[in-house]
Image 1 (cartoon, rainbow, N blue to C red):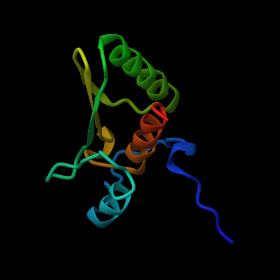
Image 2 (image 1 turned 120 degrees about the vertical axis):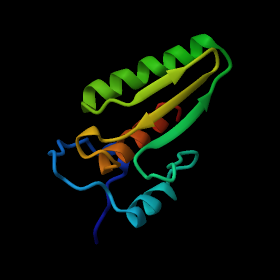
Image 3 (image 1 turned 90 degrees about the vertical axis):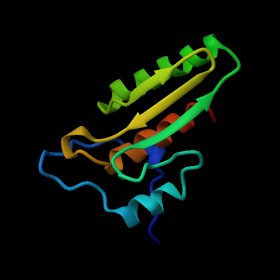
Image 4 (image 1 turned 180 degrees about the vertical axis):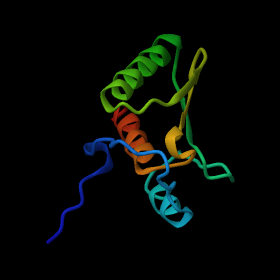
Length: 113
């Protein structure tokens, strides 16, 4: 019996320049398991907006993301204001989405579990 490791329990891996981005059907398959995450029509980024009660909670969440990003060496774009935080994931070396982006998305979601 094969047991699949949950994305949040996996680690990001180095992706060499010249590697190909994830294909659309695979992106759609992962996306169906990631509530609230979205992929624009160009299929180059993975995004989600999180809402909080106040600025303190928002900044605490941003700081937690930066810790995970540093640990995984995969750094999202983060835009935030008083009670909202938008996270944008992409794999710059391939100019598209990789499994690392879904791993980071799962780890970010797990911060709120």
